Image (cartoon, rainbow, N blue to C red; front, side):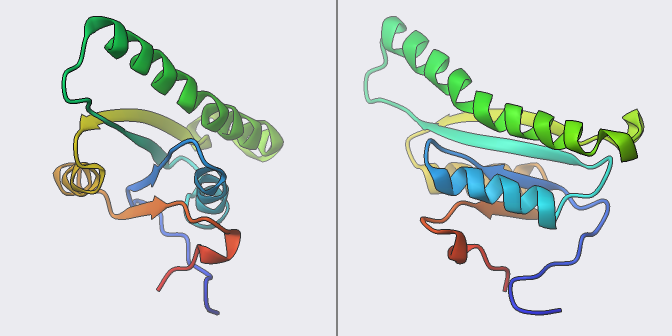
Length: 135
């Protein structure tokens, strides 16, 4: 296997940390193409930074924005399923779970989620497509 190539393994729990940038979209595409197998669940994980003094209005706005954040990723997963629909049965479809965490420290929140939920592989986006390598 060459550099940057991976072997798909059934049963591994995979999560993709997402944000508003293109790196997250590339990370999701790469994950679906390279890591996820039929019937496997994929977790889309977003960490929203807590504000120092949250008010009810700002919390509602931030939750609505976070909900909108998942929309393009959900659409991509659906399109990927439709393009593979002829070869997939319902039991073989990709299952996308959406998780939003609120914390002051994004890195700490990601690590805690990975440890607490027994995530085998966490994929993070990079500023360019060439940055997605597995060592």
